[in-house]
Amino acid sequence: MPNNQFKKSELYSFITGKASTAIARRLQKNFKQSGLDITIEQWSVLYHLWKEDGISQQQLCESTFRDKPSITRLVDNLEKLKMVKRVPSKDDRRINMIYLTPEALKLQEQSMQLANQTLNEALVGVTNGQVEIAKEVLQQVYENLKK
Image (cartoon, rainbow, N blue to C red; front, side, top):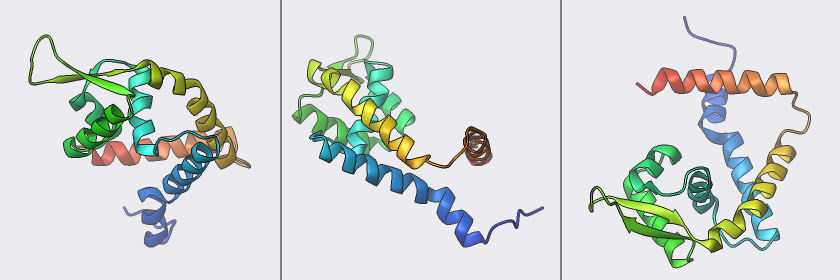
């Protein structure tokens, strides 16, 4: 049975990233104002490496929901910025493991503070209960479509 609580165009627009785009733009603005010279896309790669350093490019694809060419380009650019280094896997030389550099580690605390600040700005007037409902709904949408 279809869910007709929203006009289809409104729901589709929201689920496909209206809020996500607004948050990303604000985070990029906050980075720029604080003198952090990285893009949101680069930050998302660093974020996953801060959670688990030394993962493969394929794992980064899966973690960030990006395709191989996009991750290759992002890692190339992060390498030029001396934020990451590629190291051939000991088990399979065809696989590159991506490691953070000391320069990237220096950005972690400041960028995470800016990310938290941005989320706080985004969630003004939103209750914890509403956040939980939104997470549940979006998780269900994801589960429905990941097959």
